[in-house]
Image (cartoon, rainbow, N blue to C red; front, top):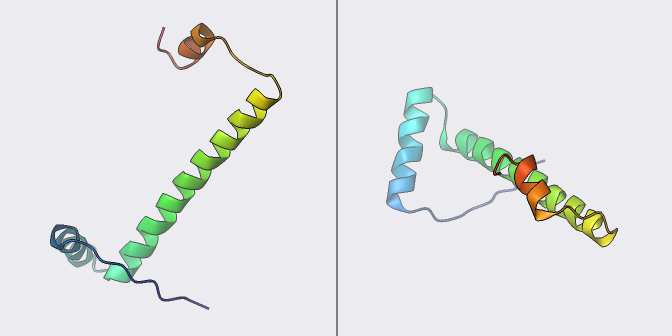
Length: 75
């Protein structure tokens, strides 16, 4: 089963999509499905990471600012 989803895109974005479709011999819907799937996967990961962080903070598992900087290579 599929659902039709419609949205507006500016001319520049539509032209870039058409160029990609021609170059890959794929149609617009193929590339739009791929792009949307990748976007949703990244956003789901981001939301899960935030939820995990909030759960840790609510449980009192907090890190010192210096530890965070060290963890992310900022110190």
